Image (cartoon, rainbow, N blue to C red; front, side, top):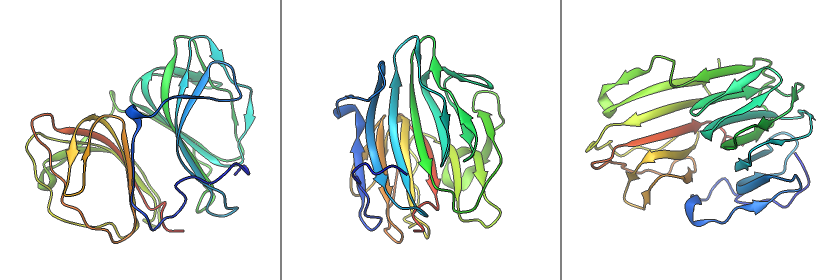
Length: 226
């Protein structure tokens, strides 16, 4: 990870970022804007999460990746050396690979850089619009599993909770972070609308529920095992 200042780096604290209320910040690259969500500087546990906006006809310099980089397309589309990716496509690029991001028409991306817990050499591309989802009836939802490592530590999924559903109170043994893509999720602490990113530490319970709009969200577990 870089030596930039840490941000939301304490894994024992609940973090809620209502990103629609946060201004875009310029980066060092012309046409590229950022909303930083967290940054942890550590050679073994480092991570950085942000929203990235590329203006039309923007191209970033080629990067030799020293961390794993996961990208989820929120709006528009982008391209790299291997293809083009539209809205609600998930791409995981392993450390050691090359990455050249560009966007002819502009895009908004959810980007996570993570020092791998274990060395993972697999590149992944999953288009949520063209992949079968799994029913999750006891949670009133359906899910698209993006990955789960063989040790069961790191998992990620794209989930849709149907309208007017209540999920029993629970905590997360390995922590959880969620980006709300559409609709709204509520619990006893807050209301999480579109663009809200929240991170729950290990062992913090909550009882989420939806109302008329339901909720579409990107969920990750396991990263908080630091």
